Image 1 (cartoon, rainbow, N blue to C red):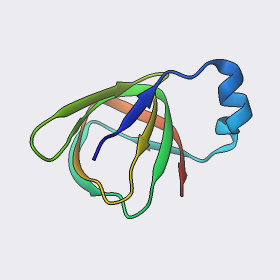
Image 2: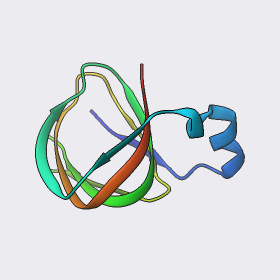
Image 3: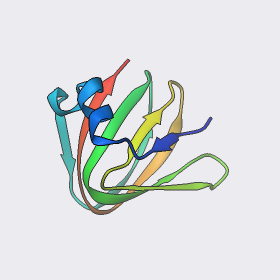
Image 4: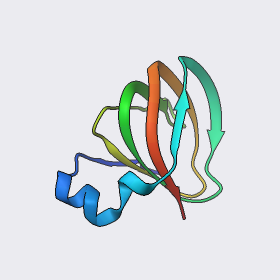
Length: 89
């Protein structure tokens, strides 16, 4: 399973309604996570390494839009406090 990552243009953020999505914040930490549904998120600040099964690392940070697929198990390694908009489904 892959995490899709892109850097959307400002007009794309507006058309997706991202600024109206809830915000999630988390301090520096590491934890296991399982996605029981698809999550789309847009990082406002912070740095995180997502460790996928098999050891591949996906690095995310400010201005990244990431789509986590349903059924993904991973480990989050938050390097700098994260603040992100998110939407499930």
